[in-house]
Length: 636
Image (cartoon, rainbow, N blue to C red; front, top):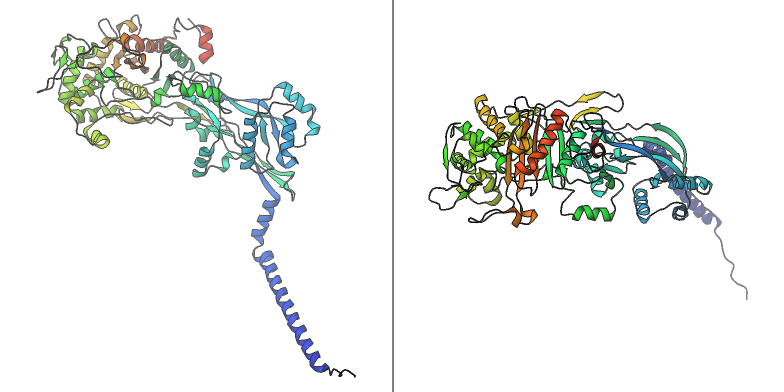
């Protein structure tokens, strides 16, 4: 049986085929138009943007770190500088197997886990076309080994880099401070200050002291190299180079020889000393004892040294001059006497009868004088010369705490001095308002009494005491203390001096000033509390000793230093300026647990003043020790 014949409609099928072809062609045209429009958008409308992106993929920027500025003392002695040493440098973009290369290099030079960790951190934070140090301070033998095997390690080379060094070692360590490796906290601060790009390629930053406070001056401006890279990110050639600008140099008011003598004078005592030029506010010496070697921190301090410094009962990392807050003790008495004269509650000739104690009305509590049987009849002059506590108990009660606060604040107590170093404490100058704010309790009369001899809530830093002493030496005018005297431009060599700045004026009448200064001069004469330490001085010294309690003594107990633990003994204080008739130096000394100010603190100040005014070197200080500690000090 034959199958039926299929009937085809050729004309209909041809028409359908043409329709399908036209639809397909239209679809292709639409796609082509879309593609053409995209090409037009990219090549014409967005040309500049995509050209910049292409260039950024082809051209990378490599930072060139600047040299850090040098720090000098007032006589040109270098206190912080840079020295050149060899480092083992790796350029990751030129190394196929980075880990294997480091392992092979470890067979030639000593590469510690710390070195590896630091290198990995640098690599993670930067682009791989940059060059990074794997090991610093290579020995000559290590340099020779690497050089002999240089052909085996493409992307590895030995370079000379600058490293920070503090040639005075422990001397002036709290003053100069130190630099250390940049950490996450530093990075966040740099980003917040919009200064991150200027630290590209920089490993270190100022951590404390002058190094930190003047970081923006010392660091300089980072340069850059434009590097052409291939599709794999490998460096091909250098297109351009912008030189970095070295950091500016600093000249300090500090006399490094004077600094060394002051540090030596402390011996084994803990404490602080600040010496100022009262006519300018220039800081001549700035001591916190004990100190530390800042060189330990430059490349990251090891755990042994860190634990030793951090756990030491002597707290060598504490900047006592700037951040140590102590009761002023009897060093507050000259300022109290001026307050009494200012408000008219005392005249120079007013006398009191001192039985050895003071009592508030309707109270049985005895506020005892340091001299059990009292000083007898005492006027203002004798109250300072003999440091009569009873006189100042009465004076404080008559003045009241708020007038005391108002007057003493003119000398900088209870507020930051504004010194050009970060981290200063303000201390405490109490008042009713201060206590209400801090403890929400009323002020009691007994608190006023003990504030009159620099105890109770009163706290001051050695720096504040020095600034206040300089104000008396300067007739009531207070200059802002300044560590840095000049900045030297690294490009031009031009020196820009920093002008002295007056921050307060107590406007002390000459006759009132003379009353107090004459008494302070007699403190250093026979019968005064600092007579022994000042004996034989060929210049006039105006001074006041002080003793500040560390722990309270019960009403009927007596203070015996020999029966107490060393850390519970009284602090010794001493303030002075000289020559008293034409002051050139004002000084404040605090000796922790040193006892009487005239015994332990005053001799330290005397050694400093003798050298500064006479060029006299203490007998206990050998030529070699002095030179090592602070330059070329020569004995008479």
